[in-house]
Image: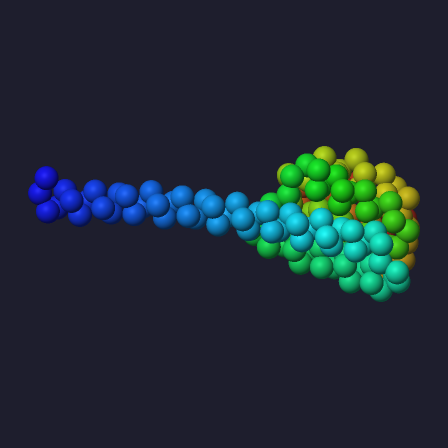
Length: 152
């Protein structure tokens, strides 16, 4: 084996090792993100005050906005279940969080559409209705027209 072949062989081995390390790092990052999502979902559910729950829900949005944060169906279903909470500001941030997953979160669309029918006429600049409409759009689903004549 000549010098060039030896160098190419070493380079190929390094590429395989780096690829393996990158895969392991990506898997560890996914695991960490899922853990943070799970912990933050729990904070949204159990927060003692409305402000605590809203802040945790807003943190969910920040976590899910990260490009390297993946979610499985179980996590998306858990997020969607938070739409049942009575706090409209929490539902706004949860809907936006689901929207960050795009088409991967389509399993949450029926829950979003159900809640939208209930909250469509809430007044305000940042209502769950506006968050839900945005999320549905990010999932590739055309939201229904607003029931109240103006879209939130």
